Amino acid sequence: MSVYARNGTPLHGNSLCGTCVNAHIERGDRESEELVICQSTYPEHRVTFRVRECSRYIEKQRESLSEMKKIAWLLDEHGHTRKVGFVPPGKRQETSSEIELVLGKKR
Figure (cartoon, helix red, strand yellow):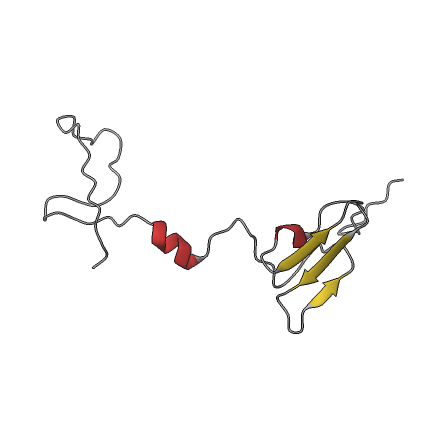
């Protein structure tokens, strides 16, 4: 007979705080020397356990919407005959071997 516990307590794994924007983490020489302070609440509080889930978690590596808008490409039509976007296979014009890339400020 086997027993399966659904959503049981995991015994290992990294804390979400290690990859969260709101975490202030101080580590010493020993593995037991670690201080984690959550800065997403007021007042800030010390986290004394490994965090598995957090409602205020924001990943460090993920760009915000405003950062993504800064690096996004704007596609614009040049006349009525040219369309913006990708061309399906087989409909590509073989005569045009150049790609026009127009860089400019937003209107």
